[in-house]
Image 1: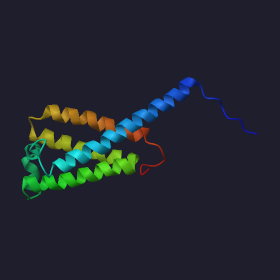
Image 2: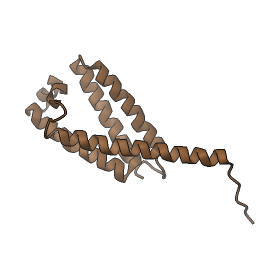
Image 3: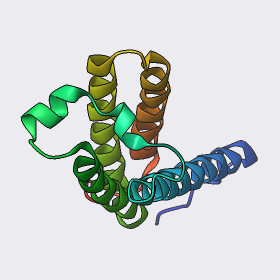
Image 4: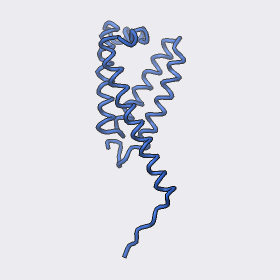
Length: 138
């Protein structure tokens, strides 16, 4: 006969707090990439091409705005991935943020934005750790 262990109020509160943190991070890392990805097509928030290192257009011989369209599509996909598969999507967002950080460091002059994006990368990794399920694809 198995008995179910009683959970203390502190344990229940801890699980509740973890779930709240998960929902908060999942929501932010779903909405933000989608909004910023869609803005790559309108440039309402900012002219995103100013954040693209010139080396990117030398590697990918396309106009900067065309590259931003591709970036926008990837960001929307990443946001949807977080919504559907938060464990996998969070790693996708973290990897994407790492790429953005490298681009900003190469570009120079936007070290504050790179530092902010490093904080977001850590948040995406925290979401990964809080995501339920086994394996990275849940």
